[in-house]
Structure formats: structure tokens, C-alpha cells
Length: 168
Length: 304
Image (cartoon, rainbow over all chains, first blue to last red; front, side):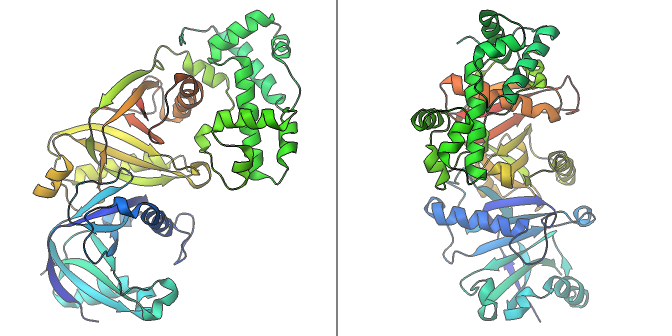
């Protein structure tokens, strides 16, 4: 699977974050881990108080950002941030936090159907990156969920973009 | 009312702890304040004065708050009828129970049963000798009102459940992340910020280790970009609020003693109400050794 390489400006997100081992109490793709809980918390807030979130970008894409580096990889801890992209940081609701991602080039992988639940992480970081001539530019990556993602129960019909910061 | 935080001698402290045990053993019995006095061989008059001076509750107020808190938990955790729960806890008619319950939790027992919620912070915990000793360490728990402008912090958040190591671990990670960063321009004070959802006792609360960004307004962050690397740090704006500040003297593991005092002894009598279910721990700029008996930190709660 070949990614497209794109340049992207600074990304500003509003949402919720979790740092720790998200699978400390459970595992797998079930919602019963801290990532699932983070989504539940975000979606509950969005459902109830969505109108308080101002300056949302037009396609209302949702982001799941994972930040992990050598030290955290040693213990299985990482930071997960779930949120919406915004165009301005005014009027941030008190319950929410802000995450800013720098301007950088990304390799964008478009996953379809069962690719979404496969081990794409290994495919990208081990298989693709080794032969690509690119290196990881930062210790994070994100999944960008837009209208093409229909939900975990309709994975066959879903499309998901995975963004990996790269440098040539 | 005056909150006299004078010294209490050891003998008096342990007698009042004995009275607290007596109350705890008899939450479901028909005891009177006179019975409590007798349990520690005090006259009724002297017992009421002493109990109030030592715990900052009147004996009857404490008994009612404990009974209602136990009744609330029984409502949530068992299928027992409301009337039976009231009777178990010595409320002999449902109207009295309902009224007292509403006064403490701002919700009727029947509403709670039907899926209503109370924040676990509203439940009066059992007081112990450790609580008594803690509130008489000095004048640390004297409240001070502080108005703070809005400020922006950079930090990391985790969910804390039963694991007592989660908060110290996060501080370790946070310290390491800050060392990985370029130095933050004019860093301010360190804060630990706890956010309590209604069901935090069952599902945990959020805890953020944070450092104040002294020069940066949110809008300015947007304009100049972040001077932080794209690591795990997130930004949060704390709005302009009125805060009541207490000093916690002692190690982190004793924080619950201060919080119990703030929420259950001071707050109900203060006439104030919480603006948000948050607790801000203020650590200044050079905080060291959170495990020592002598260390001091500010505990701030936002009020309306």
C-alpha cells in the first residue's frame, strides 16, 4: 500500500487526552480500554455540548493522536488525544484541552475495510518505512476519521486515513 | 461561624476518636448525643463543646451526615425499599428522611433511585483520629479567598482509579517530558489539577500535571505556534475564577485528610458552592519532596 506524501500546516485540536497504559485494565479492540473510554467521554461531551465547540473545520473530522517515544515504548505507556480540528483557539470550553501539531510533511495511508483492524502499525513503521527513503519526523501519528468512516460495526464500508509525520 | 483551629491534646483527640468509633458502630441503632457523651464519660455539655472544637461538626450533624451518606450508598447499591433503608438508618418516617436527604444531597431519595446522581464527593466519609490530628496541625486549613485571572497551563492528563502510583508516576513522566523540551519561556508555577466526574468513585477521576505558561494567552499560542515540541503535552485554559485556598501540610498520601475537611466540614457550613468539581494543587516553582511531613502545598477549590 503506497501512501501519498502531503505537506500540512499546524493542526489545532480540541478534545480530551489520556496518558498512561491504555490497556492496563483490558485489551484489544473492545471499547473497554482507556482509548475507548476516551472516545466515549469525547462523544458524550460532543453529543451534549457540541454547540459549545466553536470554529470547527468544515469537514468536522475527528482525530485520534498517539504520541509515543523510546522512553514510553519501554513501558507501554503513551498519550492518546481524541478531538476535533478547529481553525481558532478562541472560546475553548473549560472542559476541553488543546493539542497543537506542528507544520510537517505526512505520509498518508488510506485504509479500507478490514485493513482498518489489521496490524497497519507494523505495516507502516516496519515494512513501508524501511524501504521508502523516508524517516519518522516526530514521535506521533494520528488517525483521521471523516464522513467515509461509518463505524466499527460497518468496517467493510469504512475508509480511514492514517497520518505519519515524515522527513525525506 | 468561627473556625478555631487550635491545638488539641492527645488525650482529648483519642477520646473524640473513640466517640467517632462509637457513632460508626451505631449508625443503625437508636443512639442519642447523650449516649455518645456517656461512651467517653463526658457530661453532655462538655462533650458537645469538645466534639465541636475537635471535629468542627456538632455530634448530631455528624451523625446525620454519616447516616444519610450510608443510606445514599444503600439506595445506589441495593434493591432494598426506600422505606426500609430509612428505617435501617433510624429515620422513622419517610418525610423526615426525604427532607434531610434533600437538604444534604439536593435530590430526593426516590429521584436518586430512579437514576439520579450524586457526586461521590458529597458523601460524608468516616472521620478518624488521623483527620483530627490533621486539622489541628496548625492554621493550615484556614480558608483564604483568592481571585485569579484566567491562565494557560501545559501538561499531561491521566485517569486515576485504584492505583495509588498513578499520580506520582505521571509527575515522573511529566518531569522527563519537560526535560526533553526546549526550555519553556518564563515557566510559571506547577499545578496538579484533579477533575471529578459524578461517578469518579467507580470510574476514576482525571488528573493533570501542569505548568503555568506565564506569558502565553491562548490566542498568542495560535499566532506564534507552540514553542513546545510535539510531545505529549496538551494545553488547557483555566478560566478566571474565585478560589478558596487551604494549605495542605504533609505528604501526598494524606491529601484526602485535607480534602475531606474542605468538602465535608468546611464547605457545607461556608455558604459557598462549587463552581466546578475541580481541585487545584499549587506547588509553586521549586517544589520538592512531596512525601515529607513538612512539605506544604496550596489546595484550591473554585467557588461561585
